[in-house]
Image (spheres, rainbow, N blue to C red):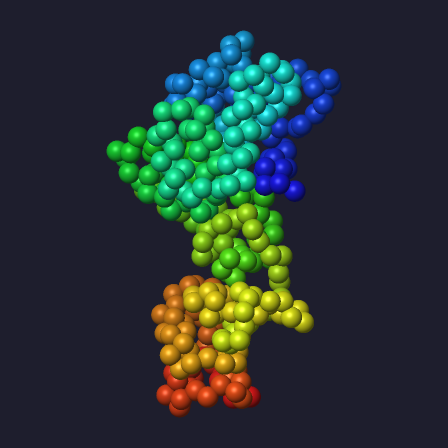
Length: 318
């Protein structure tokens, strides 16, 4: 299933995709009302002009006037439905939505997308906003900095995107995030908190380390940190255990025990220094009860073994 399909599925309670022939007037009004709110609150005059034809016949009632800007996924889903409901809409919106799909297939980094928010082309700005939603937690640090800067012209957009990322990841991941493991970092997903002065806290779901929430392993089993010069892959699943290659990552990940098969004193001591300096609230308290197994082929110095003994609850030579 594509990322967009997953997003739309997560928000299907907001907009019900139905064959245009049987769409009710109420559902049509819902689409137009979402786009009217986007037209009113989008803070992008050229972009608003592209929406104006879709909402020209909306007679906003008092309740609609008091509603905030719709979330990013609501806007996109409404635009895609508008293209189905009113085919002439495709003349203006088919190309921007196609470009958005292409951008998602070849994701740029958050810095490039934030730069595109200043692009003179309204289509590039639209695509950048929606693609930042796709990046999710990976874009949160940059968006948080913008949201904190009261002088930034992008502050309101950043706050809107933080709210959109919060809503999308909550709908898609919150029910099972504790079972998800990031394949990039081998770190568990988490309800990550974001604080912006003067605003309620934001919570988004994703990897505790890199923030991303698009790729994950459904994994509730054990993870082992392996130091083995002969291990070639980043990680491998063997007999119900994920064996993560610390010599590949060169950074800590969530593990249940440690196996040192073949590694130099220098590498092992660098690993031990990382463990000693680890402040991660999930990992840090676990080291005192964790096993560290040293393979028979690994000839570590007595000093290195002593360092390991200070880091872990049990150090055993196999």
